[in-house]
Length: 186
Image 1 (cartoon, rainbow, N blue to C red):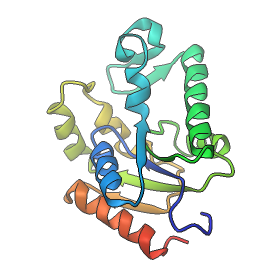
Image 2 (spheres, helix red, strand yellow):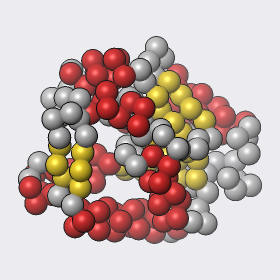
Image 3 (cartoon, helix red, strand yellow):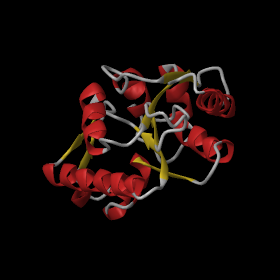
C-alpha cells in the first residue's frame, strides 16, 4: 500500500453470492470522495446477451465451474486495462470480483494495476449460506456459489478478510472503512 491511507483501488474478491456487491455499495457511502464500482458482473452484462450468448465466450458447467474462450480472455484483459487507465487518471475504484484463478489471477490484476495503490479484501461466506443465497437469485447458475466459496481465495494474499456468513454486509463495509481511516493496514 502507498503512504496515502486510502488506496486508489479496492478489490473485493469472493465467490458468487458472498455479499461483495452490497459491501461495494456500502463502501461508496462510507468512504470520502466519489468511488466508482465495477466488477465481473459489469463486464458480463456488457457481453452479448449479458454473457448468455455463445458469442460471449463463457461456458457454465453443470457443476458450477466456468470456462472461457481465448477471445473472451482478450476482452477481459482490455476491460482491466481500461479500468487501470481510469484509476491512473484519478478515479477511485471498488472492484467487485470473483478471481476464479486465485493467486495467479491476483498477480495478473496487480500487474495490470502496477504503480496504483490497491487494497485486497477477501469476502468469505460459508458455502452452504452462499448456496442458499444463490438459490434466492434468478441471475445465478446453481452450483457456482458452493464451488467458488473457497476456490477464489486459493493463493490470494489479502490486506483484510471479512466474513458475511453471520454478519451483515454493512457491518463488514464499516470494518473496512474504519481500517482504512485508521491507517492500520499500512
